[in-house]
Image (cartoon, rainbow, N blue to C red; front, top):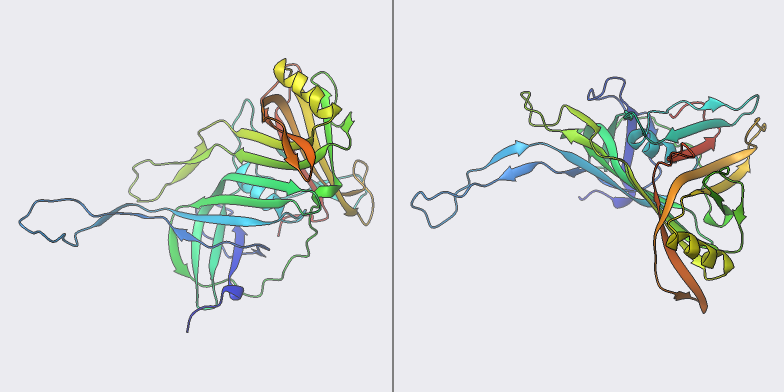
Length: 334
């Protein structure tokens, strides 16, 4: 009898020592399956046979877990961010509020070291385990009247048969709703979140390459023994705007190569006790940079639209690059 798709699951555990597998402590409230990405080579040889021989070898062990798009939540988005951007697994206090602040600042002059995870995946017939996992890239995408959707690509070093850690409770989550998102664009000498652009935002897609990559040193193993921020983070934000006065103003900034500060802010339900800075569960996407491109005028339901791509880049005047902040009511990530 085959396994049941509905009984699949992904479980995560934070590794106290990178690369040392641990029991899972949380269930991922989304979808995805582990991929054994080991490399198997069948060498070509001339040995007097027309038929290919079954000689083979495995020079590299590797695994992956593509997390498919699922509604983003204030409680679980931080797993992706702490495994790809910066190791922040405990929320900062916000005065006397019950809310906790998880701030993920992208690297500028010094590299970041994310938190590694052990991942468990499978169904009711069997499970596999993948350790020393980190996030190489992720996406947040949203359109009007839907939830923001999160997806991520995880890399790990070896897939092995395993069993699921038992007795894990589902975390209560709250979806991050795109229609509650506000767009702010300010001059580079201004403040993030100073000027709201109203009646214009239709959709947005944030694409992030974390720059984290494995280091394939020869040390007696077929899998990687370390990873590092080998590449600069690459962050682009594609925004769909009504073709109105606001969009036309941004076209002027695009053509003038004007650096700007851009913020997307999305609030959820009220915290049980408001904090000093935040009163609601919140997602902030803060970027410094410039418009990279604008597509020609398009159309959506009879309205003219413009799609622009904003590329994040460190600005010396603002001393700012990129940060994603999530505010929830979890003291630590489970």
